[in-house]
Every structure is written in C-alpha cells, then in structure tokens.
Length: 361
Image 1 (spheres, helix red, strand yellow):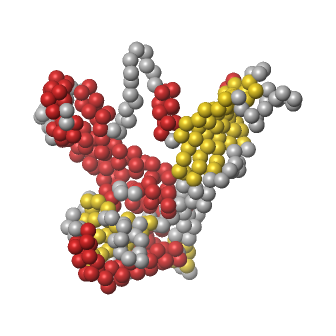
Image 2: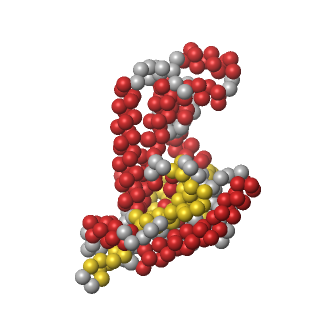
C-alpha cells in the first residue's frame, strides 16, 4: 500500500494488491480521525483481472468506532457504511462541484450533449425562446422540435461545432493513450470503436461485425459510401522492434510481418467467398456489402516507444515496406492520429469561415 499526504494531514492511500475476486485496485482517504470515530472513503474498481477491463466502480464511505478492548479503531466493524456505483458517483461529484446560490431544482448538463447545445443557442440568441415554448406547447414532440432547430443555420452550425469538439477531444485522448507504455490493442479498439472518421472522409460508418465473415473476426470493417468494405487490423502501440537495424539498413520487425500476413489472409478469404457472402447479407439481412477486391490497413506501433531510432527512419522504413505491398497498407498510430488531427483543424477553419459569413436564420 502506498500513501501520500496533502495539506492539513489529509492522507490518500493506494492499494498495491487486490482485496477480493474481480477487484482491480482501490484508492482511499481518511476524511476524519477524531477521538471517538474514524471516517474513511474508498474508491474501488472491479473487472477482468486478465485484461484489466473496468466494469464497475464503487465509492464507499465508512465510520469506524474506537476498538472496545484494543488501542485504535475497530476497522473490522464499521458503525456506518454507505456506497454508490458508476453513474451515481458521477452525479455525486457533479453535486459537490456545483455552485448553486438560489432555491430551486437543478439539473447538471453535459457540455457535449444536445441539451447543452440548445442552451448555448438560446444564450446566444440564435433561437427565439417564445417560438421554442410555443412549439413545445403545440406539438409536445421533442424529436420534431430538434429536427426543426437542426434545420436552421444556427442549428446546423451548433451541431457541427459540437461534433468537431467531440472529435478533437477523442483524438487528444487517443494521442495521450497511445504514448502510455501499458496501453494495449484492446484499450485502443475500445476507445476507437465506431470512430470511422479517423480513417478519412471516404468512409461513412462501420459495418456490423456480427457474422460478417465466418471464421474471421475483423477489428474495424469500414464501410464506404458505395458499399465497399475496408478492413482495419489494430495491433498494439508498444512494439519494441517495429523497425530495427539489419546489416546496413533498417527493416520492419516480425510483428509487422505477422500483422500484414494476417490481413492478407483476411483478403484472401473475402476473395474466395465474397460473392456468396454478398448475396447472403443482401437476402438475409437486407444490407448490400461489396466484398470484391477489398483492401486492408494495419495500424501498429508508435515511434515514441522505440529506442535510438529516429522517427524519420521509422517512416522511411515503413514506406519502403508498403511500396512492395498491393492491397495492404501499414501505418503507425502516430500517422493515424496526426492525419485525423490535421483534418479536424482544416474542418474547424472551414466551419469558422462559414460561420462568420453565413446570414442569420
């Protein structure tokens, strides 16, 4: 157990070992240590011990009395215990951070939510409050109202702005996550999920992974506007031999070869069964996937995790490797996220330009 002390003897401790089945770790603090009672708070995480996937969080408050026969407090028998989990913790934190000076009932609004966008539009005067209230009284149809607001110039601008903000936040989180030495392929896949826009503007979504191709499980099957698929294979960001010296040059490591071969096998399988699968998906699920001559991208490694190898050398080596491939491209996570960030910068500049020149709705 490790601990740290802040001002006024406030002690925070971190458990270095699991306390029970499924418990991944815990942090805690002593809120009060008086003559007759000791009050503590503990934040515990529970999940899969193998993958370290967090499935539940529990915040627990306890009050311990003095031990009846021994010095100190009776930590085995708390007088009081109260706990909350997951979203309840978020609401508790929001309540503690909120500064409310007037009587009434209040609701904490996520700044990235549609509600926050509507409030922002009202504050800016982009939506007439009188018309808004009249529409609610007349129809009571919030979905119809949302569509009507979104159709206005102000609504389109607000939705676009919220989308760009959310996407930039995700890219920033991914950039930070990929540089951590403990980050795994699973961590990144969970974070990326359906963020198809990271891979470029020609993709419109992610195809259903369920029963897409028998025997194969693709990490991200991107869907193009014309119905063609593009397979993305994600590997870990920490690849010590992503690129390494070989005689007088540098070559990619075995991890890159294996990932590329895996992608090639996926493509071969689609070439052999693509026509049959296309027909099956069309008649059984009503979706039209074009599986003829599919391409693939392998995302693997990050230059920051390599020792004594310049990023320029990494880029040149992978570019030389890609030059000899046909339908598979290898990129690093740095390439993927840097390109996505530049694209967002361009979109933001275009959005700001249109916002300043667009007439009011």
